[in-house]
Each structure stands twice: as structure tokens, then as C-alpha cells.
Image (cartoon, rainbow, N blue to C red; front, side):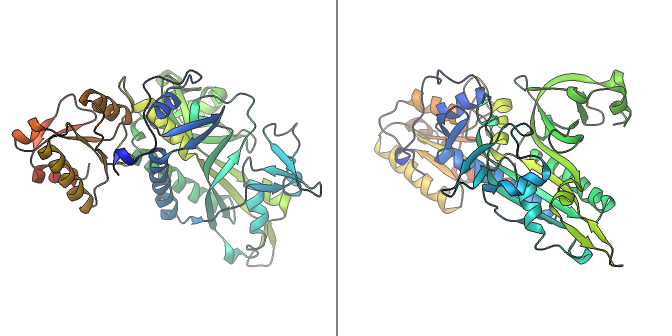
Length: 419
């Protein structure tokens, strides 16, 4: 993509009404646009990142047997009443509306009840189990105070997977697989070294759950980390009983601030009992389906990456989720520079390498360097009179302080190496 054709622009000043680092940098760099408190639009660069995160999640969910669907965001009152979660006294973040005929509807807070109701049409026998169904779907939550940028929104996309098993034993086997899949997701997204599986409260769905918490000084949660075991406990459930059940010694914990990037729940038969999701065993006995729920917000993960991997110049994207692999900068309007930059752009593109080409002629070198640091693409390649005189292109990783001149062959060798 040529940067001159990109309709978005970087901003020099931070947005005055944002206190979170992720929203500040993503707005300045042109990845998102704030529509209102807790509601953000994803611009071309931001959408490229989100789609790459979604594809990582999709690959890991497919690998453990997930089948992708898309459920509706509009949900009927009758779907949630059997679970006693339609009342605002029980769930206080509903957005509710009505049809023309006064039928009351809700904008999906989550989809446990809706997918359970749907699966009553497809699960009748033990032969139909187990099944694992997931989606990427917009959720709506009427938060009293939206904060933390794209990490806590009133409208956001979530990947939610639901498991349907014959019994707890079968469920536990999948539950352990889901833990490994989640670890793979965070590792591939570049924050695995900072993310811990964490014993936590189950909130509105169960007594306990497992969260995946990423260490950051701006985190909303406090966790106690046992780095030797690679696990943690959320402060909200921290007690001797819980310590004994994660086999953790009290003296081995370290307190950290963290942000939740994913969670997994054992739902049991709560929703299947309420909505009549049952199956017949081999002997003809009727039993409720045993369920689990597994969530990750791609936008929340994106915001967390920005929070933990940025520096004072801007964003530092891991290569796996960066909008482009290379940021190609053309410095000056010299005929040879323009020709060299255009040729390099075309050659890289032909080789399938994703390039953002800063071909703008009305920007100084300093402005282009500042934009490149702010946007945070992993590799910066500069074509200038000096680089051409030195025999090639100046190449620098976003995490490096200085670059070096490389030939085209050396550059391709670098870019085609699996990092």
C-alpha cells in the first residue's frame, strides 16, 4: 500500500480525552477512531491488525476441533429468562430495545443462552457429542464508565467458543486442550512471555474460572504470580484454600498488576438444564449436556499488545500481527531515489511481502522517521541518495537504535527468514 493513498493520517498531539496509552497511540498512529466513550471504529491499519489476530485465534480454535458460526446480536427476552439473567437486577449491562410490535429484545451481552437454545436443534444423542462451536461476534455492554481504551468497550468483538460434552470427564479433556490453545495464541501474538494462566472468580457464570492475565503496570487487576510454575492467582479469590488447590506456596508468590486478555469457564449443566439441552445415552437415559465457555476479545488483545510493547516513540508490533512487515521510506525527490524506491516496492510486493510505502513528497525525513516509529511496523527500509551511494538500502528493525545498508539480496534474505 502506498501511504500517499491512505486516507488516514498520523497526529502530532495526543487526544485530550484519552487516559489510556493504547487508545492514545492507536488514535495518533491512525489505527482507530473514537466515536464516543467506549466505542471505536477500526481504520485500515487497525483492521489489518485485528484480522491477523482473529486468524491466529481461528487457527488455534480449528486445531482443537472448533467449528465457526455467526450468531445474531439481537436476542429474545425468552432466551435469557430461563437462566434468570434478563433482569437488570441480575445483569446490569444490557442494552435493550423493542420491535414495532413491542416485543422486547436485547443486544447481545454474551451468547451462552442463545447458543444453548440453538444446539437443542442439533444435539439429541450421545453420538452427537462432543461438539465445539465458536464465533467472532459483536457484543454490547452498557458499562457505567467505559475506560482503558479498546481494552474495555461498550461495543466490541469477542471470540467465544462453547463446548458441549457428555459429562465432566469429557469436558475436562477439552478444557485442558483449550488452555494450551490459549497459550499458543498469546505466544504467537507476542505477549506469551508476559501472560499467565490465572485462577479467578467465575463472575456471572460460575464460581471459579481461569483467566489469562498479562503483566502490565497499567493493568486493572492484581495477581500473585508463581513464575516457577507459570501460574497466578487473582487477588479477588486469593486465600489459603485456593493456594492449596494451585499447589502454590504462599512465600513463592509475587504481586503484579495485570490485564485480563482471555478467560475460560466450566459452565456445567446450568444453561443446558435451564434451556432443555439434553441427550440420550446408549441405554436411553436422558442427561443434560455438560458445557464450557471460552472467550478472547481480539481488540482487547490488540490494545494489550500496544500497552506492553510500546516505547516513548510509539507502537512496536510483533511481526505476526503487524499491519505490514516492511515500512519503506523514500527520502527526497531525486530521480534515482524515486526510481529505486518504486522498483524496490514492486519487487517486494511481487514476492508477497507486505509493504507500506511512504512515497509522500511533502514530508521531511524527520517527519517520516517519526511516523514510522509511531506506526511501529517491524522493519524500516530507507531509500535515499546516501543509501544508494553506499550500495543499497538502509534497513533497521523497529527495536534497533541504528540500521545498516543492505543489498536487495541481503534484504530479501532478512525478510524471508522466519523470525
